[in-house]
Length: 304
Image (cartoon, rainbow, N blue to C red):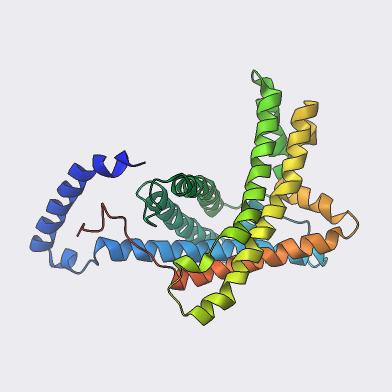
């Protein structure tokens, strides 16, 4: 990751020269804000889009637990639900563009070290997590654009079928059983990492707000990360067992895994906490959209 900024230095110089030439010749280009301002705007829009998605998922899961809507859904299911509401395609376009902006910010964080995490072991692990997050939100942005092109017919079992088809493809590969187990353990690791992050991370570190306000809003981030971590565990367990038993039929979707939890003793309380945690995570993302320190990477902050 260290070599990447050095590799783009010639490109940075070329873009700077082109920008200077364009601003001298075009009054319109002279009105365009500096690149660092555009990057900051994109990052804040991205955090807002992430907040809207998690807030929507949390409310839908909570309403499903209370019996006010249909089955419990995951993030993609929430997007499909929203796409069928009034102005649904407009929502999908806005969410898709917002998540695309967030992916761009994740690239700047992970590849160009926008948060100045450095190249220590912890810094590289943080940047690797940001890159993984960017890949995940790339998939969500693509799903939103697909739904913008046209909402799909409602089929609650479609997500389960797709998950089982992917599991069957893995099982057909050499060492497929172990690959599916590895996928389940990866999901388990992501869940545990979120719970650990909830207690270890100083979420106020990146916020530009008063000490009093930071102290009030950071509990939302902690609750949100615990909820995200717990939400991964049921699906992780099912995927791991499916790999152990070499049976793709045991794999299910994110929403269906939460539905199984809801059938446990006190399961409704667990799902209710996860739903409220998603809402808290979404609200904290809105806080980040407003107060997060957005620092342009060192190697591109001098672009015009």
